[in-house]
Structures are given as C-alpha cells and as structure tokens.
Length: 274
Image 1 (cartoon, rainbow, N blue to C red):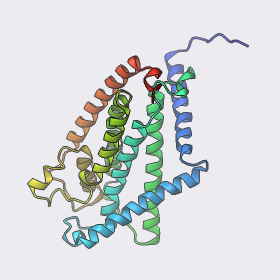
Image 2 (cartoon, rainbow, N blue to C red):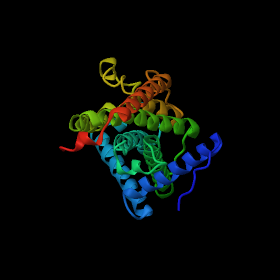
Image 3 (cartoon, helix red, strand yellow):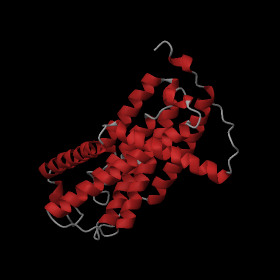
C-alpha cells in the first residue's frame, strides 16, 4: 500500500517536472472546452473578429491609405493583433493561475511554478496554432502573403508572450494581498492595452508627442519591431528590441521574487471571510 520514495537524480527530477508541466498544460488547454478542436476554433474566432474590427476601424479612418508600410494591409493588421492577443492571453492566463492555496497544490508533485509554466505554455500553444491557421486560411482563400523574415517575426511574437508572462506574474503575486483591487487593475491593464499597445500606430510616422504615450509599453516595441521583420520595406527607427527584453527580464525577476514572498506568507484563512 505504501511505497518508499526513491531518490532521484537531477536529470530525473527535471524530466519529471517537465512531464508534469506537459500534463498540466493539456489540462489548461482543455479547460476552455471539453473538445480540443472546438476550443481552438473558438480562439480562432476571437482572433478573426478582432482582425475584422481593427481592419474596419482603420479603413474608416483612412489609415490604410496613409500607411507607411507598403505591403498587404490585412497582414499589417494581423501582425499587430496576433502579438497583442499573445501578450494579453499570456498575461491573463498567468495572472489567473492557481496559487499556493489552490486545491491542486495539495497533490505532492504540484507547485506554483508548474501552475505558472503550464498556464503560460497553454496560452502560447493556442495563440501560435490560431495564428498559423488564420494566416494559412487567408493565404489560401484570399491572396498569397509573404513574410520577409519569419524567424524574426516569430521571435517578436515570443517576446510579446514572454512580456505578458512576466507582467502576469507580478499581478499573480500581488492578487492574494488585495484580490478585488488587483483583479480590477489586471482587467484595466488588459483593456488599456487595446490602445496602449499601439497596434494601430506606425511608429515611424507618428509624431513624438503621440509616440511618447506608447514608448513605455514593451508590447508597442515588439509589435513595431515585428512589422520590421514581416515587411521588407519597413524599418523601425523609434522602437527597440533591447528595451522590450530588458523590461521583460526586470518584470520576470520582480514577479519571481514577489511570488516567492507571497507563497511563504499566504494562508487559506485570508479568504475565509470572502
């Protein structure tokens, strides 16, 4: 009935943790819908609807005629929407990950790092698969598209995801101390990013007094740099990959330290009166 736990080497422990993260990621992917295909389709519909909304808005405002990016205008809109969705979904998934007082943490192998990693990886999986399907569908059904540097564009998408994970960890660590306040702050930040991400803005064309409202946001830098990799004729001058990478690393370190501190002090009794 009882079995003594055998000592594991570092490599065995690492593989066991990776296996646990994999199974937890699958669980997160299937949480949205019991059928994995329908869950993917729902995520694709969200992406397509957002692309159509911003395409319509920018067409009505005449942004497509004034755009400095010479290339497929729909691809220009999708490049911003894909990175925005990847960042926002990662942030929301990590900020809503199971904390130290969750019932899942009662199972011995489970811990908060596994919960955070699985939430982040499941959101990345869904966004990459959705973006690939939408791009292929547009390429096959409407007009062929060409991405100038696919590796660079993918790197910017991964950096958008990483920045969302890093910021989400800060919100996750702060939420147990004031759940209502930080729940609202998280939602406000995600909604504000609809505009603050600058996905409808061409940084090279925007005046400085407008651009300075977006310079603080690492997502603004990754979207603009990503368009430099997507389009041959666009060369970003006012954004920086290094800035987005530095902010992501700083937020990740702060998030890890805050999560460790919260994990050491949190108690289930904090929520007994809620």
